[in-house]
Image (cartoon, rainbow, N blue to C red; front, side, top):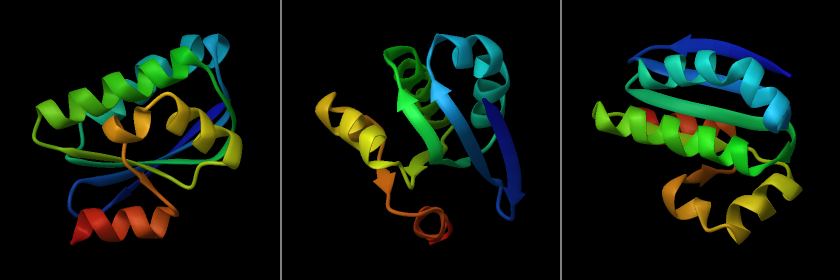
Length: 112
């Protein structure tokens, strides 16, 4: 259950999440994740190391995306594992949370 933050040029940040985005993850990481996501104009969330996505994890992602967008920012998810991608698709979240196939693709979209 970790968060790695990498800042890039142009107020772009890549936030790499790992573990299970469930109640325990939200309790341990929600404040830090939300703060970082809401204070950057361009946010890429790398989901490559996320093995499980619960409803509370989805809530954290949606609220952070809304916060980033309310400040004129952009928010993209990147590189989800098949199970996480399936959860996002089945819940309709890909409409609210655009997904790029890789971090490089997401960064390129936000730097264009």
